[in-house]
Image (tube, rainbow, N blue to C red):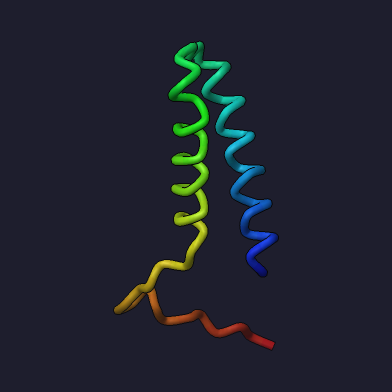
Length: 64
């Protein structure tokens, strides 16, 4: 994913987050945009693969 696509994804997620914040009835306009982008940043961070060690890191074999 290039930088342009990452920025588009961030804007898209922020738009969804903004819709959710508006539906919750948060009317503090100065906090809406910042909150939406903060949520978008957290969603992007959550997409990154988490490093696992031990048994969860062992991949199951696929039988052919």
